[in-house]
Each structure stands twice: as structure tokens, then as C-alpha cells.
Length: 475
Image (cartoon, rainbow, N blue to C red; front, side, top):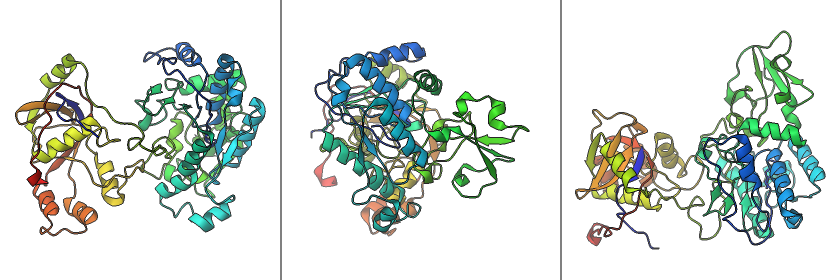
């Protein structure tokens, strides 16, 4: 569901990865310099907006394939007059990377004359040592693997190089978590100049500038029938691996499929760890081959790396609509209105103000199940208890409908239903509270509220209002 607050109802006091990850460090950066290109801008306009960044005192980190780093590095060189030479280039070796990834990293270092500050999981330098200390990657919880192999080494690197500003190579067309990616993220002090770039923009730049790319892009995997993505990491699959001699995007369809043409052909469009990356069909998204056996879409570098005092998830969620006319228009289009009970109102206020960051709305079924089972969001951030919007009945309510939420008779928010589903409250009680006995007061309350659940995305606008008062006797 999409949640749009009608009033301000509460106040809260209170480096490129080859994988490698790459970070740069220097001083003093004017955040007013970069401007976000308008949505739908042509590639040339997007490049112009990225080129306008002044490399005077920021930290650079480009995530994804090394091509992202190279393009940013070239832009910085043209604008900075050599300031990039004082930056630290940090590379994270998870000890589970493709050999071609490490080869590409060396080519990047050589081409741009910048040796990386390499970081590995703490206390180990080989895959064998990693297994002995932490366990086999296939047996570890993915959140634990990501933390010890990526998040902790990257945090260690950033601390050592004392970064101020990060520049990444992330793009909005890469994954669901990046659809609303801002060019400038103020809270994270992170610049994403390629946020509006497309895959086509990237490969055109790579070819034009001679950017080193992963040699695995040259491979084609030809087979007679489709192979499930969740099985493509296995050995001895019924396909033929062919070296095309150049990146697949420089080849014709006939060259990729061969003669006679293979029924199905897969290629690597992106590279992460060997056990979580599989080839995909050429027309698929580059992220379609990443984390295919997991619910998450990110490795944790961008969702779990944070600093002391930062909001959970890295940035404080603000869902307030600033324009009263927009809020009024959305309220007028609501299919029905619902008077919130006290618990629901508290949840809504926490979502709107960012107290439940990084949530942008009530949990969908996938997120709910992940939190109930593992106390983690799908992207593996810790989250202790599910946050759902229970409805006693959903007759006449359908996906996409707007609900006007009221608290004590006053408009609070508009909820846009993205899905409607039935939670298992008995399982929730046992997993979250250790019992399903109604003698437990929270379990009793939980079971009494059994009903369908609507999930949402949330946004809203602020307006001065008294802060709701809750009687202490109820808490």
C-alpha cells in the first residue's frame, strides 16, 4: 500500500566493488554542485549532469562492474585537475569472486595508474582460511556471509581512508531497491551521477573510452532448453560454454547463438560472488542474475553499511507530502475511509516520521515472512517485529485502491493498497514471542486482530498539529 499522511501528527525527538568496492577520500565538497538531470533526460543530458561534478574533496565509490569506476574516474580527471590522485581507491576481495573479476581489477589499476587499497574478510587471506574461520558460503546465512565478506571490510576501509563523500555507479534500472535512487543522497552524503543512465548508455561509454571490462562478458552458454536460474550455478550443466572473443554486446545475435542457432543462450551481464551470480539471457536485466536463490537484491554494501548515529538503514525515511493540494487530491480519490485504533495510529505515525526506517510502508508478505522467521528485512537489515496493517474485512477492497486513514476523526494519511494477504498469526506469535498461549497479553491482542493485511508504500506532507497523547497506563 502507499501511505500519504494528511497531517503532521507526531514529532520524534530524539569503491568500487570489483565486486570490488572502491572508495576515494579527500576533503571539502560543495553538495550544491551536482544537479539531478530531469526524469527521462536524453543520455547526453544525463552525461552532462554527471560531468558537472567538481572533484574537490569527496569520496568516490562506484558499485557494480569496474566500468562504473572508470567512467567516474575519467569525469573526475577532466574536472578536478588531478585531485583524484589524492584519493584512496579501495577494493574489497570477498575471496569468492570470479578469477576474471580480479584480472579486470588489475587492468583498471594499470589503465588509470591507481593502486587499490585491498581489503578482505577480517583475519583471512584465502578461501580455505575463510571456510575454516567463518564456514562454507553455501551453508552460512546470507546475511552473515555478506557482513563478514563485504560490509565489515568496506566499513573498515572507509574508516581507514576517512571518506567524506561517496560517489557510486548505481543506476535506477538495476534493481527494485534502486528504482527511486536519487542522484544526490543528502543523509548519506552519497552522489549517484549515473542514476539515470541505462544499460545502453553504459556499454556505449565503455566501448568509446576503452574501459576495461570483465573477461567473463565474452562467454556465451548455449543450450537446447531453458535452465532454471536457481540451478545455473551448479556444475556440469547441459550447456556449451563458448568464448566469443569480445564482449557479448559487441556481437550479433547470430554470433551469440552460433550456427545452427542454439535454442537458449545465456551471458554474464553482471558479476558478484561466484555462488550468487548466474548468466542470464541477453535481453534480461543485469541484476536478474544476482542473488537468484535469495529474497534480497543487494549485497549489503548500500543497505547495511552505515556510521555511528546514522538512522537504521542509512537514511531517515521522510514520507510527508509537502504540497497541501497534492494531499487533498489523494484524499479525495480514496475508495473508503478507516478509523485507526491506537496501535494502528502509532504504527502510521512511526512510518510517516521515519521512526521505522528503512521501512517505506507497511510490510508486504515477503517482508513479513522474513521478519517473522529471521528478524531481518529481505535486504538483511535487522528488524525485530513485523509492522502490518490489519483489516477486519476486505470486501470490496482491491489492489490499487486508496484508503483514507483517520485518527480521532481527523485525516491522517492515504494508504494505497499494493497487496492484500492473510498472515499466519499463530506462527507469528510462536516465532516472535516464543508462545501461542493467550495468557501472553501481546499474543492475545495479536490473535484478536486476525484478519486480512494490506501492505503499502508511504509518503506524505507535514502540517503543524498537536502531538497525539497516549495514556501511560496503556504502555
